[in-house]
Image 1 (cartoon, one colour):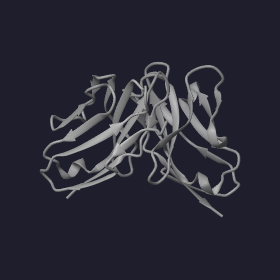
Image 2: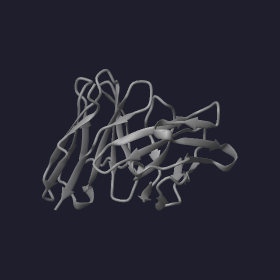
Image 3: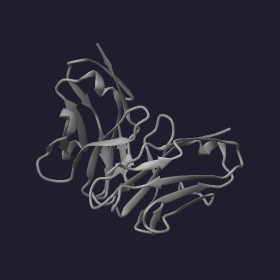
Length: 111
Length: 114
């Protein structure tokens, strides 16, 4: 068990570009969560999956954001037409009937 | 709506001294409460959790927290801090253990001085 992994760890992009992040949860974990953390703030819930079903989305997840978990394993989070306000750390977590384990995050910088 | 308040943005403690980090929550139902620690470049690590039972819960790394329903508080404590405890600490509240749709506080940064 290598824990939750996220790729890339850092991403710098120009405003208006699309970006995609990947999260690989701990094996056998059926729940997968995405959070966003801006500087000086705690993480904010974005969305979560149970297996391949996306069960809930936060109001923070505008229509420019889309998340998928096609086979109930890894997940991707895509941001279209990035804005400077999207600059943040994007955290992924997974769980199986217990506390969540968080990955190291992907830091996005939009210039 | 649920919320978590961590009134101390930054705390400085001498190595070997005791520590208490404050957390107040607002939640409509019985809360599931958590403390996480985040070191630079690292993911959030769960220190301890509480739902019911003994109001004093023990966690990893020598941390403990006490749930006080009357004060809506869940303060984190450690009798003697080590330099390696320097990190950001987050209190969080959630609907249950299996659903980690958590609401986090803004965090308390802990600095340890020799």
